[in-house]
Image (tube, rainbow, N blue to C red):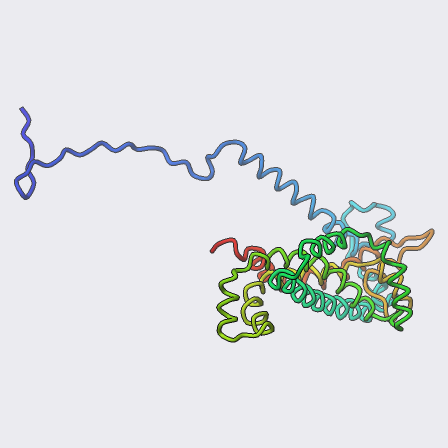
Length: 301
């Protein structure tokens, strides 16, 4: 005969309910698909890094070593003459400065134009808004070869041929088309109550733009600024036609000047590609946190 135990108040205590002890599955025991996906990601990462590693390896390889062992053989000595040859043959500091200031100004002007036009389209609610956005979308789809002849003719007429300012103006306008298309969609969903509250407080349109709209879309503008800088830096075709003298040319044109008709110094070309990549790599590492914040802005409210 069992006796029930009593609690402090004299009432019979409830018997302990049995606990169902289940085995928790941690992240390392979620099936074989997790390891398959991880292996595919590793293979993809190696495929992405492999060209960069080959470039670095062949940049410090002598032409004789490259000819005898090929591009996959490890260098037997640290050969730096290719870097010196590229630096002196192309006058790399001048090319580097031309790429930096043209890319930076094109990115700044492109972001500014994108913000102003997108504010007029998305917030100002001008007539024919959808058609204007469609025009900007179609402008992004035009190849550069179609634009080259009229752009070159206009640059000659206004006296900007063989000038870095032609590159700044052209790419600021070209990239403005993409920036306007992107920002117009964002500003089209901007809270009207916030704009009406600012207008009731006596804020002008210019003040609403810079004190209400700009702080909210600033992360998106930071992403556009980084992309516009890198895109302008890597442009080759239009700068090749517009910039005709060595003192005005950019880094991609300096790389192309190393390729001859019958002879190609591959180690020097790899050394030049490494030097050309380092500024953009440093730029990306500096603004990596800004890029991450801009991409994830608005994901969590």
